[in-house]
Amino acid sequence: MRDRGRRPGVEIAYHRKGAGEPLLLLHGIGHHRQAFDPVLDRLAEHRDVIALDLPGSGESPDVPDGIPNELDTFAYAIDAFCTALDVDRPHVAGNSMGGLVALRMGQLGLARSVTARPRDPAARLRHVPMNDAPALVADTILETPEG
Image 1 (spheres, rainbow, N blue to C red):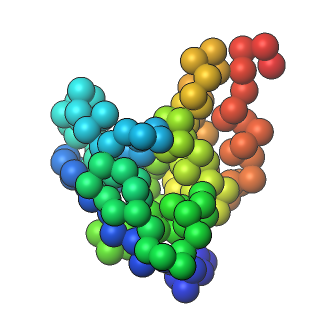
Image 2: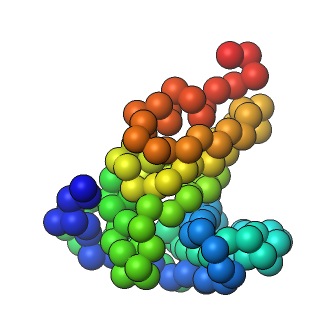
């Protein structure tokens, strides 16, 4: 069970389209949810797609004063956001900073599956179902072609 008391009060701007299993799209640092516009329609044919602006990016304000601006804050803020939308443990895909947040959500058990693309273009894109083994995420997803 998730610790709902750890949710920070952070506003998140988003665009939602489609139907099916929920899929969150998390952009990289210094970017915004519109980065996913080229693929949004195609994904929405199969999923309930939610592209959001991470706190402090795009139309989402920074985290409030007194709340640490760190990975766990983003993960729990997105979990609170999902709860407000009545979305439980979505699939999460992200790149760069969004990939790190996605991985952390997987480690915390807040995602059904995680697909992460690190900033390094030589790294492989990997998808791992979370099931009951979120601790496998970091070791499994962030592999480079060299091993």
